[in-house]
Image (cartoon, rainbow, N blue to C red; front, side):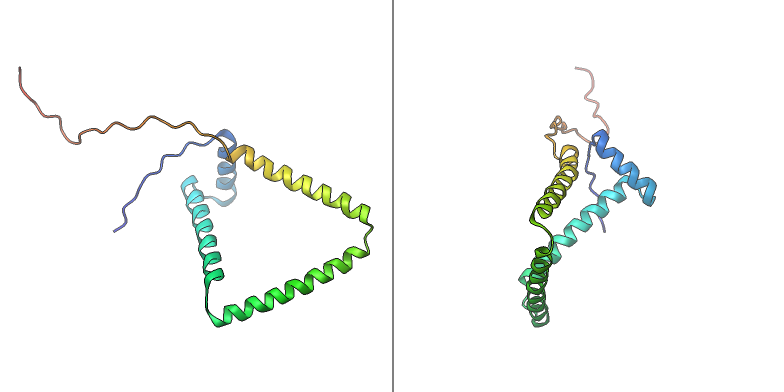
Length: 135
């Protein structure tokens, strides 16, 4: 039996715009969007941990091959960069870093905020009030 827990969440206007855009594009409710995002993040973390700590022989062989291919790719990139003038590389790098910083900065403005902590809910007795009579 599944026990559902409600998580009260408040969104800023910008965060809500993202949720509305996802709702329009993919026809999903806000809860579905949040649930799938959380599920994706958790799957990513678990698979990364598993992949790093796995002792399966096949995965170790694949990791060795991928490390070797990464070194080959790095050499090919270095050789390709030799054909491009250094000043152009610097200019392109600065443009790339600036754009990435702008994109991630926008997300940081929206999602990384100090949120106000609400009041603690009062513990209330459940059920019908007890009639204590006249005193």
